[in-house]
Length: 346
Image (cartoon, rainbow, N blue to C red):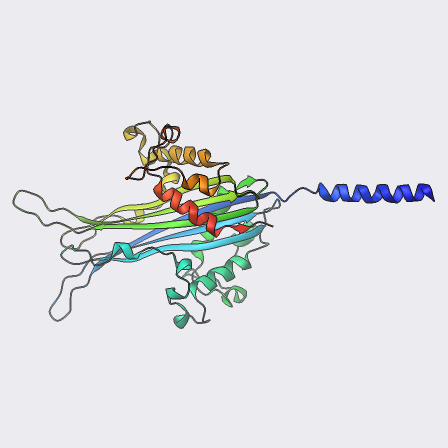
C-alpha cells in the first residue's frame, strides 16, 4: 500500500512537472504590403461640357499574418491605406485637402460608407474581418489557391457570403507577409499600425524667363509591426514606409509621373533607394530603419516615447544618431498605434 501511495504521488508530481514545462507556442510573424497608384489627366472644358479634374489615387494594402509551426494561419489582418481623389484642375491647382487623409479603410469603420451599396449589406471593415477569419487554419498554399474572378473577387460562395470586395491585392500582400515572416519566441502580444501623411503643391505657371513648375502630391504610409513580451517589452519591431512621392502634374493638368513605377516600399528598394551617398553616416534607409528597430528592442512604450527628437523629427541622442539620422517622429507615432492595436497571442 505504501509503495502504491508513493507511486501515485510520484506520478502526480511528474504530471505537474511536465505540464509546467510545456513549451509556449512559437509562431512566425510577418507583414506584407502592395502599392497601387492610378492617375488620370485633367480634361479642359469643351463647349457645354465642363472641365474635369485630373487625379492621382494611391492604395497600399497591408496584411499581417501569424503562422504556427506547420505554416498554418493563426491570425491575420488586412487593411488598406487609401488616398484616392488627389485631384488637380486643368490649371494645375490642387483640388483636394492633403490634411483630410488620416485614416485607413479599417479605421474609418462605418464612416467608410460601403454598407448601403454592398450586395451583402456589409461595411469594408466587416468584409476584411470575415476574410481574415476565413483563412485561419489555412496554409499559404491554400490561400494562394483561392479562385478569383477576372475582376479580383472570390468565386467561392463560402467567401462571398461575407466578402464581396476584390481580394486579389489581399492575396498578393498575404503572400509577401508569409515570405517576410520571422519566428519569435515568448510573444504575449502582436500589433501592426500605419500612419498616413499626404502633401501637395500646386503647379506654378511660367513667368518671364522662369519656367513653369509642376505641381505634385506625395503620400507617405509608415508601417510598423511589433511583438511584445508579457511585461510589455519590445521583442521585435519593423519599420517601413510606402512612399509615393512626386506624383506630378503640369500647369495644364497633364500627368507627369508614371503610376506603374511605384511598386516598392523604402525598405524593399534596399540600396536602390539611393540615400547612402547623401547620408551623413553613409547608411541607406533600410539600414537606418534596422538600426533604430534593433535599438528599441527591450524597451517599453514609455521608454520609446521618452526618446527626444528635434523640431524636424530627428533623434537628438548620439546613441541613435550613430546609426539613424533620418526623422523618427513618424516611427514613434506609428509604434504607439501598433502597441495600442496589439492583441494577445494564444
